[in-house]
Amino acid sequence: MHASSELDRNHSAGNTKLFLMVWGWLLLLTALEIFLAYERVEVHLMITILVGLSLIKSALIVAYFMHLKFERLGLFLTIVPATVFCICMMLLVFFPDSLRLTHLPQY
Amino acid sequence: MSGAESEGILETPWSGGTSPYSVSSIKLGMWLFIMSDTLTFSALLISYAYVRMSTPDWPRPFEIWPAIAKSSLMTLVLLSSSLTMVLAVAAAHRGDVKKTVRYLIATIVCGLAFVVIHATEWVTLIHEGATPWTNPWNPSVPLFGGAFFGLTGLHMLHVTIGVVYLGAICWGFKKGKWTAEHVEVSGLYWHFVDLVWMFIFPMLYLLSVNPS
Image (cartoon, rainbow over all chains, first blue to last red; front, side, top):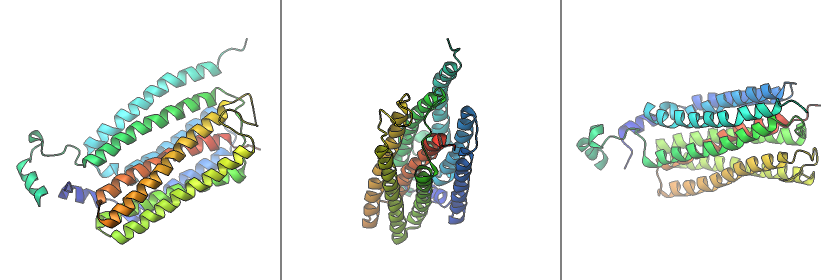
């Protein structure tokens, strides 16, 4: 069996009240996003705001629902920085080009 | 217990006995899968954002009813299924089989509800003339259909696989075939599917609401 005593202690982290609170925050942020969708905001800014809010939501899900906050730091350091680095690389390849295209002079 | 015994023999990290992450191999495997799937969805979403931002006349067909109301309801259903999933994992670690199975079934029902509502939403759009190659709102932007059906379709596939996965875990846990660890790992997958929807919903639906 792989269930050592340390694993069991880790799993006791988080209780129903905490989960309900996280769920409530996620719903609140979603409601905020839906509200913002009907505000007249320029699309670049809108994408930034919506993705920013979604990043907060995903951080809540990963930390509390997926339990990463209560795992060893080593696991976090293995998973998160590498993934974030890869996503940043994609952003560096794709986005400058998209901005360049939208700002091309019209001939 | 044999576990405690082996811990006694292999007690330092250098002797190979102590797991550096203190998680089981299946959990680490699931995390690695989630990493790769994150990159798949990131690539799709980033390329979609690229197309979306460089197309000023991107169609905005989604009215409050049915598209936005339905997709908001789907978000609520999926978030609630994540809540029942964490409660199932907590119950599984307490050894409460009855409650675990009940919460898992609630999660599966929410997942099925998500797929059904999403399917009706798709049918509405298809009846209006949207396909992966064309759309009736602005035919000069054929990528609308590709981005919409591609991203939501891949996500729906993940939800469907998740429902089957949770069903198998639920059955196996009830039989005593699988442990609380398996329930937790299936939970990781389910929360990830929820997390992806947290990006797809604002990016695909909320950026295409009809502003009038």
